[in-house]
Amino acid sequence: MKKSFKLQDLGCANCAAKIEKEISQLEGVNSVRVNFMMEKLILDAEQDQFEAIFNQAQKIANKYEPDLIILSK
Image (cartoon, rainbow, N blue to C red):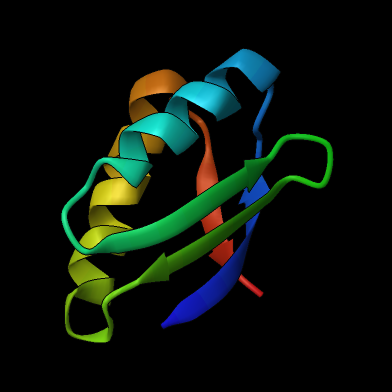
C-alpha cells in the first residue's frame, strides 16, 4: 500500500534525510521517500501493518522535528 502525506513544519533537510533513513528500517516498509523541498512523505508499506508503521513514522519524525505533523492529503 502506497500513500502520500503532506509534512507540516519540516524545517531541516538533514532531519528529513534522518527521518527517511530510520523509517526505511522499520519492518514492513517497502520504501519511503521524504522530500524536504516539497514537504512530502511517500510511504509504501505492507497493508496489514500500514497504520502501525504510520504511527511509528510519526514518532520517528517527532524525534528529529518535535513540531512536525504528518497530514493526510
